[in-house]
Length: 152
Image (tube, rainbow, N blue to C red; front, side, top):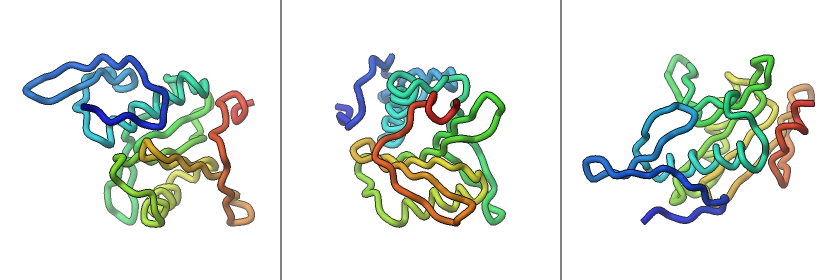
């Protein structure tokens, strides 16, 4: 049984293959094994597209980056039409408590990406933050802005 999340449910195309559940990933255009983290990532992507109007053509999943010489992967990056990164999202499994370590991870990734809007979610709790690079600060915000709000 797949865990219900604090995100709207979506009619995923779920199939079983070799005893493992998979779903069709609309972004990567392939079947993906459903791990707890992937379950959160897929729900969050659908939330972005269906509730917050982010164009799926501007969403990239599991993009690579180099951090201190090590290869890392970002869960979700959203771009604007000019190809600039506007939103970085880190997804965790529902069993992972969102703590300072998780925020530190997304902050390290953002040292490379330099995105002004960050989100962290374990599917049950979601945190959103605006980065003020000029003043070297940040502010938590209650709600993720709609795509049209940040891209106008």
